[in-house]
Length: 377
Ligand SMILES: NC(=O)c1ccc[n+]([C@@H]2O[C@H](COP(=O)([O-])OP(=O)(O)OC[C@H]3O[C@@H](n4cnc5c(N)ncnc54)[C@H](O)[C@@H]3O)[C@@H](O)[C@H]2O)c1
Image 1 (cartoon, rainbow, N blue to C red):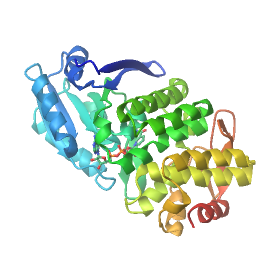
Image 2 (cartoon, rainbow, N blue to C red):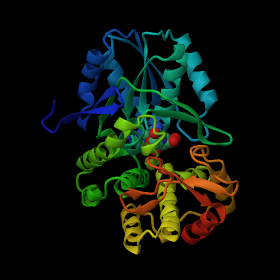
Image 3 (cartoon, rainbow, N blue to C red):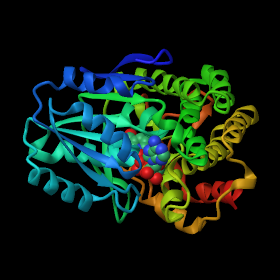
């Protein structure tokens, strides 16, 4: 391996389930060995590949043959294509290509590819092995540090899904350096969310990594990945299905998902969650006395990622309000017909709970509408 290679291994823990996560700058050349060691008895490796990663796939496939039969399905990721039709189509192709119960689905791409591959692996033969090779910051720092797999329904985002654990995760941080700057920056919003909700002590590391991005992008990404794992792991170890304490990672997502859908895909996931957190902070200030200083921390972290009043998206706020009403966190807590369940903060690092261990509180729709107008109007 070249001298600049730095490789790390963390064990992701979800209750009793442990998943090795290999990451580092220059890891790619070592991934075939990791797959041979971890999946030696597999017959077919079926890659679900983001077309942008076609060359990476070819390099990996060359090294994996002849130990495995390797084939691929290319997929153009988008929120519109992330649906059950895609999952069904890929399963049909998998079976036609000889995938068996001993085969492995390998996701090479961002969070969209990872989620679809996760659904395919969970459903095909009632579950076959899954490997995640994430190639975007959202994929690497957030999506794969979760067992959640889901696709969209017409009624809303991620409404159809399940929990499914990969056998192995591996990420060469060099892959992430080709992600467009805007997507990269806004993707880091999920890391800012971790700082705001569970790890206020990481604010300095986060801002330093943000500055390092222009100097040594891959090393900066390594820092962000470490912030992601360290923030999420303590909660996910205890609540692997993210139905109680770990719902805190939905901060900003109730409004964020609605903005993403209402904008017809022009506002990306990370950016939309950033705006969702600013709306949630505004509601937290109105309902829970979140301090002006903590509101300022939100603005500072979002500002470091280019999410400022000057860059606010033009979205139909009425449509956002309607979509929020269909959010998939309905049902976790009792809400009236004119209320929505949201994650709110009492202070940075302290989440409001409706009962011990349940970090969702009901928010009247009119309060939500007011905050939407304040932040996005
Ligand atoms: N399971 C979870 O807990 C979880 C968590 C967060 C997000 N998600 C899901 O992840 C999805 C968003 O993930 P995403 O932001 O990675 O989106 P994505 O997978 O759609 O990728 C975004 C864009 O980046 C491109 N791309 C991918 N890798 C690249 C690379 N190395 N270089 C250049 N371009 C590259 C893709 O082709 C696409 O155009 C959403 O559907 C979201 O619901 C799931």
